[in-house]
Each structure stands twice: as structure tokens, then as C-alpha cells.
Length: 516
Image (tube, rainbow, N blue to C red; front, side, top):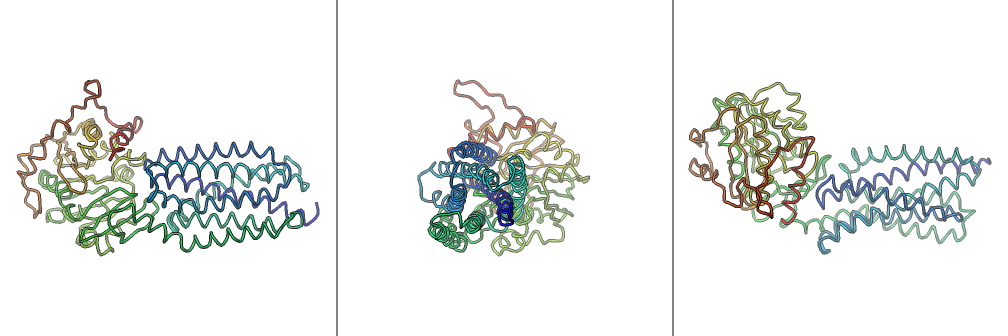
């Protein structure tokens, strides 16, 4: 081949790898968008992968009909991927804020399928063009596919470890779209002698480039205003960590923390939640010295534990270092946790709670399980018999654990399934629920290796809400929130423990909360 043709062929191989990186980033970006805005990460990633691959298949099939003008067809495919993909996250947040319910999901699925179809069109065209230039078909196919698959790995790693945590979903989309645009422009320039009306195509690319650059610099700020409409109060802090989206809002003295859009606490009534979580547990434990908090990276549960001078060591295990850092440095959180995580008795471990319990050799007199609700696969494992067995194994013989267990009113069978799962480990359980204005009626499961005698509980710490008498009233459940779950035929449903092999709690949770 001529030197110029060799140069063109080599760039085709590079282009196939680059567009593959962009394609896989868009694919996982759409899954992350669906998980954050629509909920149920497993479902959204499954739909995203399925729709994207189906689109790729259809795109590859359509490519059979593209036999002429291969380069200009490829260029316009890249320009369309850049324009549609670049504005995807920005538009998704706008639709969530302004469009009717359900249209945001339809939009996301349509965009996913469209980008998948355009991606499926790309590779066969590149292979055909490499062959047309003079490369043997089997060699051009192998090299383009190698570049494509290798690019897929790089794209996934880039999104997980750099783009999402450093740039967020809106900027990431515009940034990746700019790369697609650059590939289109370079291909356009390299093959300019073969292209009619070169100036028109280049002008279109420059217009799209101006739109993408504007989006890269100003899109996130506008999307922030869209996202603000998802929250009742003004946003005072927002960041995208490696694990979740963290949002703090504040209005008229009420500070609220949201993780991936789900409310974690309101400063106006968090004491009702945290006092119920902590004080009965410490009171019932015999001579408590060591306490373990799983979750609760905001530090408020630790603040309540620090009221007990007999507790010598309080270990907090939270997966996300961004949360515990925020709890140590953010003025609004420090007002709530009173600097608890900087106390000499508090020891912070940023680790998965399941892995921590598997690796730790320590025993604890008090274990507080303050984890987010089981709304995805990674959280579901922290609500399984296997996980609660680990909790039991780290609980001292006279120790007590308290587990937040969602709402027995809104998700009755979820609450009692959690209780059934804890009891399946051989621990004794006791049930509580409390009205929290910002949450509604919320449930807790107390667990111990010994029988639980509530008459032994005395609330001696300084509290705003909880008393011994109030605690006893929390053990009474109404007919619509008690453990007898009845189906539409009037038959009592027997609940079974949630396990890693049979994670049925996720489906129960989705079904229970879909109307709230």
C-alpha cells in the first residue's frame, strides 16, 4: 500500500478503538443515569445493556446496505453519536424536572437503543473501508475487532475510576461526545480528497463542536438547576463520589442528606430516628465497652454513642470515604454530629460492611446497623441471612444489635422479612417502630444472642424524644403493619429469610415503594 493509504488504514484501527471506548462509556453512563434517576440499579443496567446490544445488532444489520460513501457515512454517524450522546445526560435531568412521569424512562431507553444502533453501524463500515483501501479482509476484520474489544475494556475502566467520580454524568457525556467529534473531524480531514462538499461537512462538525463545548462548560450548571427541582429545598452541597451521588439541602434551618436521591435524614427530626437506633441497644447490653456502627457515615449515630462514657472504642464502617470526609469537614453536618468522627474514641473504616465482618476478629457489645434500604443487589447482600450471621458472630454473648429495617407501614412484608431473616440466624428479636415526620412510620429490629427483656431497659442518656415509656409503646403494631401478611385472596403469606442465593427482598421492596 502507498504510505498515505497506510496512514489512513492505521488511523481507522485507532478510530475503531476510540469509538469503542466512547460507546462503552455511553452504555454504562446510561445505566448509571437510570440507576440514579429511575432507581433499581440492576434493572436499569440490565435494560441498558440489552437495549444497547440489540441496537448494535440492528445497526450492524443495516450496515449491509451501506456500500458507497463509506467515509462520509461514518463521519455523520460519529457526529450523530456526539450530538445525541453529548446532550443525553443534560436532557435526561431536564425531562426529570419538567416532563410528565414516565417520559424520562422512555427517553433514556430510546437514547440507549439509538446510540447502540449507531455504534453497531460503525464497525462494519470501518472494516469495509480498511478492506477497500487495500488491507486483506480477514486482517482488517481482526484488527478492527481487536481495537473495538480492547477499547471496550478501557472505556469501562475510565468511566468507573475517572469520569464518573471526577466529572459527573453531565460533563462526562459532553466530554466523551467531544472525542467522537474529534475522530469524525480527523477522518474527514484525512479523506478530504475523496469527499464532495468537504466544507459543508466540516462546517456542520464545527457547529456541533461549538454546542458540545458550550455544554461542557455550562451544561452542568444548567443541569444543576434542573436537579434542584427534584429536591424541595435549595441544594447547598452536591458531589458525585465513586459510589453514589451525595446531596445536602437546607431550608429554614432544616438540613437534609440525600444519597442517590433517597432521603437519609432531616435535621428537624433525625433525633427520633437515632435515639431509637442507639439508646435502647446500649442500655440493654451488659457492660458495653466496644461498639460497631455499620453505615451511618454522617456520624450522627456515633454522636449518640459518645454520650456513654463506658464505651471505650466506637468503630464506624462506611463504604464511601466521601461521606465520612463530609461528616468531618462540612459545617452543616458538624452542627448535627458535633464533630463525633474526630473524637479519639471513634475509629473510621472505609470498607464494605460485609467484607469488614468477614475479615474482622473483634467482638462487640453493641452493633448498630444503619445501612441504606435494600433497593439494589449490592445493598441486598447486607440484608441477608449470611450477613446477619456475621453480625451474630461478632456480637458478644451479652451484646445487643439494632437494625434499621425500613417502614412497616409502607413496606410491611419487607420489614417482617428482615425480622424473619435476622431470626433465622438463631438470634432473638424484638420489634420497634416510630413516627418520624420526614420519613413516616419507621421500623427497627433489635437482635441478641440472649432473650430480650425490655423491662431491663432504662434510658439514662440525655435525649430529646425517647423515654422508657415511649420505647414500650413502640413495640405495639397496628393491624395494617403487623407480621400477618395477607394476600388478595385473604390467605396468610408465610415469609422466608432473604439469602444471597434467593434475594427476594429486592422485589418485595420495589413492589412496596413504587407508589410512594
